[in-house]
Image 1: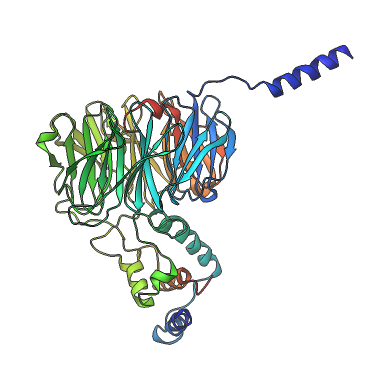
Image 2: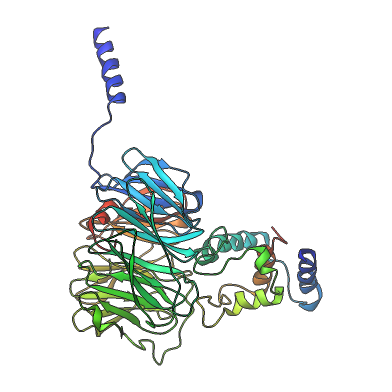
Length: 387
Length: 105
């Protein structure tokens, strides 16, 4: 009797007092068709909570608050939702535009900037309250509004981003949020589709869709302007159809090299980060979409556009060889390494699951059910420039 | 306008393109999925647009059914819209055009 009461009392107590935990092994998986995200943990590979009501997540991206407790989720309906991953609930939500593509949190954690397609431009919000701070339209030198892509944080309260239609790179300085100062680099090339910044915050690379090449800006020497690298990499070869736009982000840097998807060629391009010359190219199974370095830079994992999106290829960096072709499930949309890279999570949209692989044995070690999963984002991104 | 387009497509299947036929029920399931997921990656799952233009009926009604079919099969050079003819037959593309217009479900 006494013992029964004690057990009941303990059960009651544990139900009332939230269990303390850190967020370092937490992450978020987007369930794109349902406007919902899963909060997951990567120590035991389990789902902890489901958060609904995030709107249209067809192409959802997110970034983390400085304390790695909140995820700022950017939706296709222009929604900006602040998700508390510890309580599994929505801490705030604003519909800030017609259509957004991504965003970034400032170095000091105080501001979240959203890059928008419709109307083009960026909007900046207070991370604590989601109160609007600044609205910077993206009108190119041609006088027309432009979609914005490839946004990243820079040291200071600055954001760098690219105008897709106008072919320009802009830096917005929000040191004084009431008077944002914008620096513009025009004529960078045709149809920049996405961009990345290296983890040290020095190099910004915008991939071009409208021509072969990458626009490169040295942020430590901005007076030198934007220059072109990998010019005409597809020269002499017939460009193949690109059934899905590749994605760039600061994960493609392995040691002193940047690994990039070719456009219209089933290749991954390797560029030396000091000379900015192509050092190698690796033939792969299809049009690369994500080309991601394991955190130690020893392996590159590549997924592909439809119709080759049921395979993943693993490239060994030193030998530049594809060492394994995996078939983890149907329609692999995204990959994310655990913070130190011992495992990688893969979203298999048409298999309705997330699959976890050991990156040394290249064997599957776990799987989680998820409805049409797309992006996977671990909290280790919170402390990296450009992620 | 919508009725007119549906008529044009029906005539297309019946007369102007004698070889044209509505895709099988199984194929239609695949095509709906392709529109939602693969077209959706650029045009949005709700077709309100993204990097690609919106695909809402009121906008598509400004182009001909044949133009839509050509765009699906051949792409739009100079833009990221790729030619889908390696994955879609003309019948598939005609059905997708009608599906986007709301003329078939």
